Length: 147
Image 1 (cartoon, rainbow, N blue to C red):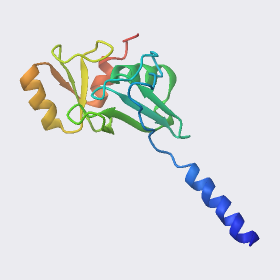
Image 2 (image 1 turned 120 degrees about the vertical axis):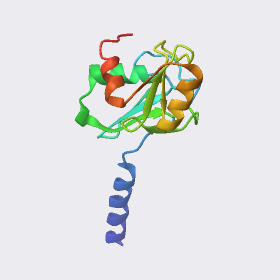
Image 3 (image 1 turned 180 degrees about the horizontal axis):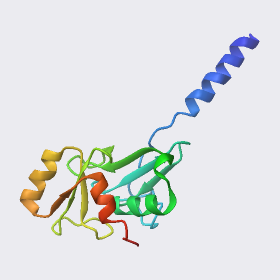
Image 4 (image 1 turned 90 degrees about the horizontal axis):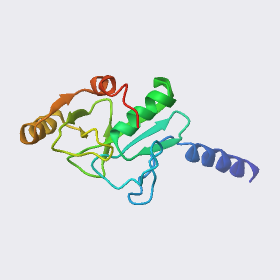
């Protein structure tokens, strides 16, 4: 019986230590960078540290500024952005494609949207105008942005 209890405790420790993104509660969660309520399902984003601490953001630009200010690249288990084409669905920021278009407003004014599929980003750019970026390019582009 003692072994069963010990095994159960160990299993519960492993389950509770799983590192994963947190659910975003739109309309009630606050941006960990600017403090605004996260309401826009097409522009939200999230960082999760290697220790499992999630940080939620109302805009991709908030996440990038916070990441540059507070974290090192090696601290992140997940870097996630909302897929503009599938509102409320987070996708890997590293493999996503980004669009800055004056015709698509984002919560903090950078007019930045992210897309899981590059083809969808290009189609959206053809419809609304703008410029396409990779993850590395958009981070460099916003490096000096503050808000």
